[in-house]
Length: 146
Image (cartoon, rainbow, N blue to C red; front, side, top):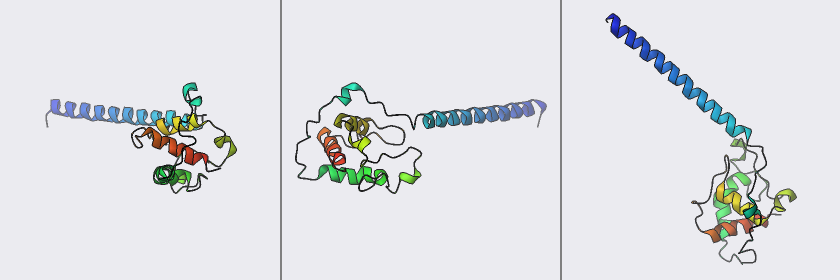
């Protein structure tokens, strides 16, 4: 190995170490930012808070709300909405208990917004449940878990 190739090897090694440190720092910073807003109140825009549920009195004869809740929500929120689903213990974010009065008192539009947008470990269901009426049926089902 020549002196020039040794210097290039040392420089590449140093560059690799520096890039690894920067990447790790960025990852840790990202996790800290996400963790810092996990326990903050979930702010719902006024337009959603005031949104009326167009299917509030609709009969869910096909059990769409229950079926979608069972498929997508119960693994974290539990079969009866107690926040005791099989994945709840694996999450950093506290899981909402739909049976609590403070949760049940939220307007339907707030539930819809949270289902639609997601936050932290809760995914957005905008594309997972693409039919608006179906999302409202999930809202109706969650509201029935008093």
